[in-house]
Image 1: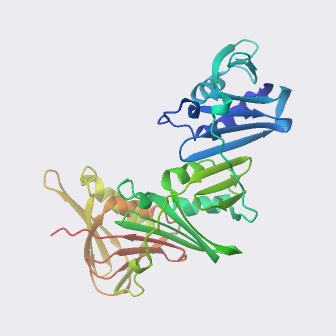
Image 2 (image 1 turned 45 degrees about the vertical axis):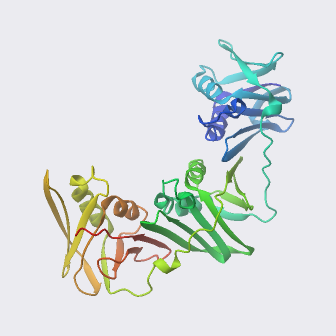
Image 3 (image 1 turned 180 degrees about the horizontal axis):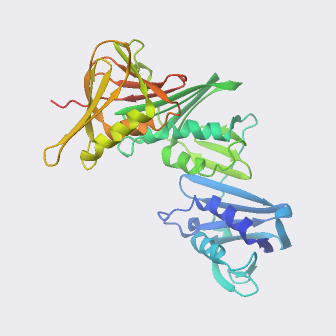
Length: 373
């Protein structure tokens, strides 16, 4: 295998597939990136136990293809070398004896390569009828929910997001059992099959970091044990979490005793300031109390002191309330909204707090209160 290629084009695609490289791999060849040079162009592939990323560079973006072939190069070193090369073009050549030469007019690097036959043969199949979504839209859906997934491996299913598509509806849910993020949208295209996936949060986070042009399309192919996303010249495949995701529908009441409308930025900022005293504590507990059309946020620390913040609210329904919750959970939930105002819903001091946008009911955030007595 031998080719000449622009450094920036190669580096961009190495960075894409490099997201699949992991320091945890005990099989040496999995630390490598597979280079497959064909008459059509160059395919780059990297994989670990959970994700596989494949990128394609067309022959039109390659300066010269001398000899086609395959080689597996240690990912960390090829990335570092290409990133630091002083010239715009680079030659990559496989030579006898399991070696790869990376060269420019002023530099030469000799690297040992891995045995190509040991690189895992991972099929990256595309569905004949993939689910298609605008990249920016899909990215928003994930970012508005994925933060609520659990980090506890003792609850493996809760470390993923539950993505369901049925008829004209797409639903994305994440929960760690203390909070819930849920986004439900009308899916523009009808689909005959019901899709119900649990995708590991860390994997889907890696995928959305690849999204640069939000106007382009994502095609999602769902299978029983994996999901494949196609975006631009990139294929991203993730394993799925096995099991039945808990039914969270019953957690959200249909009726509420108390409803307040308030300014999102002001509410976020007073919680942010009040949380100064509790940032080092495990649950970051602050208290919310209403007095007619005033909302009071307080936090205290026996060692440091007390903070009190007050803001105006619009009372839609109900009387006053006093309730405590995690400031971190509330701030993360509020960051998912894009409107100027949000609505808070309560059914007493021990029932879940529900947050919605006033002009968009697609997104719901739920936070369980914390007893302070």
